[in-house]
View (cartoon, one colour):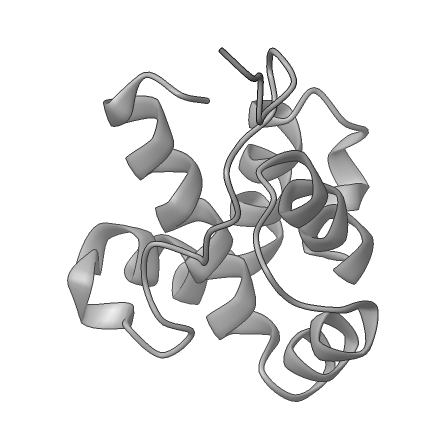
Length: 104
């Protein structure tokens, strides 16, 4: 039997919700809308990173790499630059869903 994935690695995937799927989790949307910085700090805390990292494109790239989510640094930059609220909410939704699935 051949091993196709290293232990602890993940099969290639995509984010579990779209960039603009803000209505799939209204709580996260309102949290981000009322205090975007607080949502970023929550994301950083979830990922055991420095609290100011939660709003950067770097944390999105680290997350994508860890869970083998498709994309590129350029796409991370563009999404984070043009729609920071959407990217932050998408990342938090994905973290929450992976927690529910027991794979975070």
